[in-house]
Amino acid sequence: MIDGWGESAQEKLKNSKVFIGGIGGLGSPVAMNLTLAGVGHIILCDLDIVEESNLNRQFLHKEKNIGIKKTRSALTTLAAVNSEVDFKTISQKITTENVNEIIGDADIIMDCLDNFSGRFALNQYAVEKNIPMVHGAVWGMEGRVSFLNPPLTPCLTCLFPESPPLENVPMFGGVTTATGSLQAIEAIQYLIGSRPALANRILIADYSCMRFQELKVSRNDACPICGHLR
Ligand SMILES: [Zn+2]
Image (cartoon, rainbow, N blue to C red; front, top):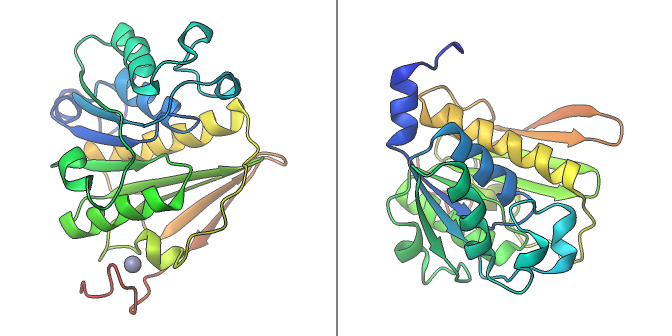
């Protein structure tokens, strides 16, 4: 009954393949929302094992799953919600060497990672294969989301030419769940054929004061990754 949805949109979701890089704070709500919505093929990729410190936000994982692979833990939870989804799990670190094999012909890439080496590998593949990527990030009480698909929009390297320093990021479940849900909505909208709302914009949610702002962003013509696209 939602405008633009209906049977044909549901059919499109069923025939869609989504790659989710990172099954943690952002990946949990992204994977759950896509599973609930009926996306037919979901690739879950994460190298890590479940740790106790994950459990304040990564709701796909349970106390009893501490010590096992996040992909396995996530699969158990998600498959119990929607048995019609075809899940594939990959317990590997995402690198420029393996992206071709692990992402393949996915229709959209969800960037739910916590490190820029993986994010840049996803970005490079996304640009090369013209696959849209929904970027998500959190820090404390702030979340950010953007839809990236050059030459329509900037790529991740246009926005972040270099990797920010690695640091421990404080976060809790409300912030990651809200931000990941925004990523999932953006992906679903794209998959059913709606115009991506966050193309050329970064949505910045400051949950401490409940303000949602946006930054307009544009391409860097000299970008080493997407600058050659016209
Ligand atoms: Zn670029």
